[in-house]
Length: 416
Image (cartoon, rainbow, N blue to C red; front, side, top):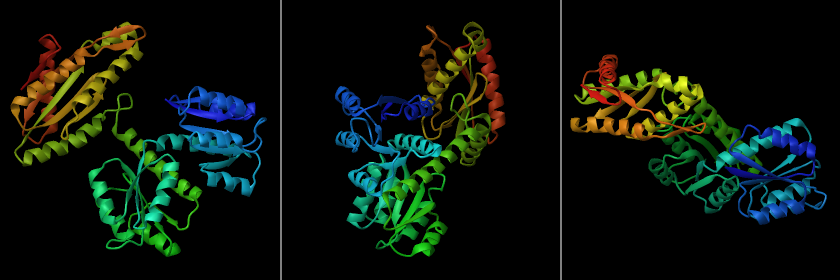
């Protein structure tokens, strides 16, 4: 859980912030109404805060001493105040404050909450910065690190491509245009051959060219463009906007392809992806194994403990399946109710039975705590191995084997 320090003497504004974070269970708010209380929190648990939201004027700290306090403790800080002064604003931004938010209307609070959520997400987000200028590379990288992003640096387009090939956690690329050997346009074009706009966001940067260069960057596949010299606030705003768009696309994709309760693929996705896998393997004369499995006596779990307990069981079983089916060619899904499906590419027939038997045993070993009670369940498996390109036929045969497993006493694997 992330801890957030809020230093604010207005009980009205403080309550608004507390209310705004009611739906954020992963964030713990620690509040202080003056500088003395803030010092006490920091002395009690130093280095324990992910972010500080600090009012500029407090009863015992009228000149921004609370901001100096949080910055001196190395805590990323956002200032909010009722008074706007250009010089004071610039002073604190130069000192390392992330943003300067005015308490002048309700939208300011919305922005503050959104900024805080973005900062929390940034701690697990990686950005690749590409620039042949060491000074420009360091400047951009330092600003992004201040914004709590994980930063990887590359001094050439070739090095950037090597980084992208070696890592799968890059969410954004910020690239300069004027670079030797391969310029920004060519780098963007090359990246887009492997990574779509919904996978990696790209922001082009340049100190020359203006609007025509911006348009050309976007036509080559970039999501956005920033002209140098840029303000840190502009950089942060552009970065946040593009990361938010990526996350929105991911949420929409998950809603369309995954089961809401368990996070596994849904029935439709299993059939769409599974058909392609079976067809590809069949053309190469390779086999696939398809399994149907369901939870034994699941109705009795719901009848005895309630449907919330049943949901808890489904989640644990799904998680166990997902952790087991973690090889490159494995595919698993919740088909509906207590029924799941799993497919794997078969390289060695002798490994199929142990693969499913290990999963069956792993599910049986799970202890699912619910409302003071430990729940245990077992599962039955029906498995078929085939090199035929008809997924529906495979699943029908697997379902017949599942029926046999149920009739033979449950908690077992039947393979044909």
